[in-house]
Image (cartoon, rainbow, N blue to C red; front, side, top):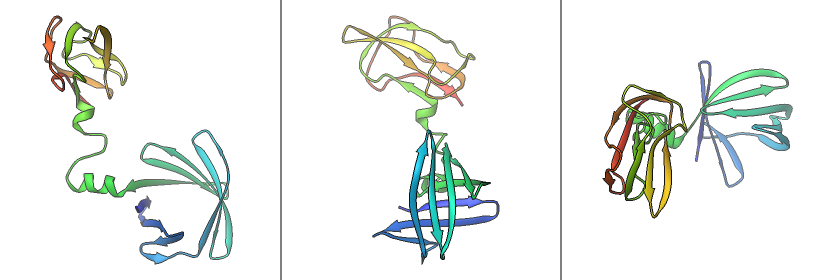
Amino acid sequence: MALHLRTGETSLSLDRADGALTADGEPLDARLTRLGATGDAETVLLVADGRPRVVTVERDGGTTRVWVDGAPVEVETRTDADLLLERFGLDAGDTAADREVRAPMPGLVLRVLVEPGAEVEAGQGLVVLEAMKMENELTAPAAGTVAAVHVTASDAVAKNELLVEIDV
């Protein structure tokens, strides 16, 4: 699978297959040696066209911070799947899963913790659902505003039934 990189006006597709590295389909004379990792950052020695460079890569969502020989470079990364979603007018962060909370199993709504118009954070409790004699707090998949609440306490719900919608 190719990794598509963009920095400023420059775009590049990198692919690593059968141990060979290609850039925009052309063989690349490069070798990577892992030097170490700390947290979300990884440092490698990149030898390209015989020139060694120390590269530190730190990933943060779709943005990757890269330092080449100590100089920072902002790089946007995309996978083939990201590009396909983009081509169809969808954004990886704008899916139904980010806007809807559905019942993961049949159950009974014990409590509704939000109301339409409420601001919520990712991970904040929205609905408490009793299923198989256990209480399950269903949480917001993303930060946003509660657009609609489709259930009330004591409602019986089916698996995949829409409970809450969030505008992100």
